[in-house]
Length: 313
Image (tube, rainbow, N blue to C red):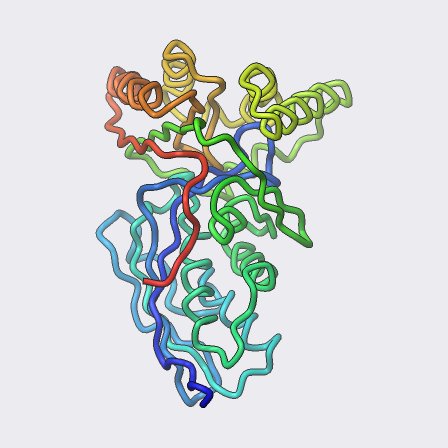
């Protein structure tokens, strides 16, 4: 006997570190810590409705309930249209990731909604098949179809992504991240706007060298290659001034033996990669103190780089 799909499902999507410094718009990794929940219910009317957006952080009330202007709503609309579904979805979002934090808040809503809605289909799709719909949703937040947050949330761990596909990347289990989020908001569109001017060719070539070293080090599990490659000479210099205290926080991570440190996503969160959890824990304290020295309260999350991705709850 074939069981009918459920009419309601709930899913969780974790926060993520977009870009991982050296991989603007093409690399990211999931983290254990905050995340968004989405509850999706099948409805007879063939539309997407957002019943509520819940959460306690600043800016929650500004999140649109119009699905065409909401990242998760747009993703579900795209899914419905592509599959020509005869039914619709009612969505409730529970925000656990602060808005404009650089932790993939808009992406987490997208991925949680898609994973929940996928469970309601007669034949659920593979995670890879959900990726294009996730990109459609992300484009609402930033104006760009970038997958550096949605890909690791869908796959878990470290992910490489293009506009067409996402690829899981193996990472050694000893790799841990310290991610420190200051009580500040930096909108994705603003952080992307500072990147508009062209870059000199020599600067791009150097950055490609760093990316190649980083990916090789990750594949081989070689600490020195990861450290040599985890340097952002393109995006970080232009975004650093948008994050008060960034240089001091980054230096605190490096002084605590980080393999590398940079801006998480569009900021203002800052991350570092470390050899082992103990080192990451110590660094997280130092990074928070560096923000505090500039009068900024910050919260830290320590996580294996190979963190789990989205799942039904």
